[in-house]
Image (cartoon, rainbow, N blue to C red):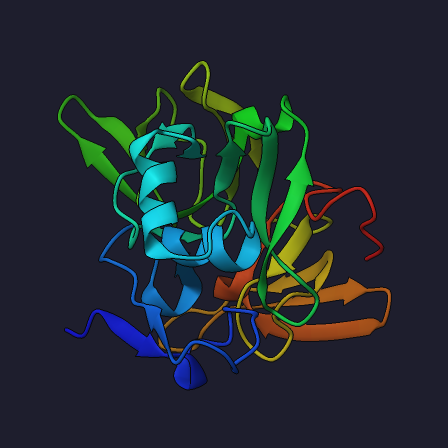
Amino acid sequence: MKNHLKRLYMPKFWHVERKGQKFITRPSPGPHKTDGCITVDFLLKEFLKSAKIRKEVKYILNNKKLLIDKKAVSDYKFSVGLMDVIDVVDSNEHYRIMLDENGHLKLIKIDKDDSNYKFCKIIGKNTLKGNKPQLNFIDGRNIIVDKDVYKVGDTIIFDFVSKKIKKHLRLEQGARVLLISGKHIGKIGTIEKINQYKGMRESTVIFKDKEGIYETLKDYCYIIDKGVRGENEKN
């Protein structure tokens, strides 16, 4: 696999001018899909503007001046994606990776308290030895829970400090939702109705935002709390 991508052909999630340096670092295999993430190298150079060259990127990482989900990373190709929490140690600034209204990844500045929590979408469930339920999340994280009250498609708010679930957000009528794929990607609205189908037909949801009412696939929904996009959220 090539270590770089041509800037001209980078995924649409990577919101940056396509002019400039010809190649961009390809993400290492990790918790996020290649077309839905950026590298730490890209984050520091293009989003945070904390580095201009690879040497500066490596200095920041080697000195543990950047944390992803409260952990230092050493690989400049490490992938970061939607809902990841970024801590910039020197400036004491905190960010959440979010989607803008056009479906591009962007940084949302958050306060220190909010940086202790992460929104994690459940994409699978397993039953371990002793009949213990395990939840599998979109970022590759797995958590063993005491009670099987969670469903695929729900979101939990994970507390980095206690290593426990702070809140359970259900995929249900009235829930606030961010669309993470499809032609309505980036929209935030409220679920009006869930159309649950059996067999090969994919289930859909009817959701409403300030501009209208739409239908999209249930799998495209990411349940969130109000204000997750930032203080100036208008949707």
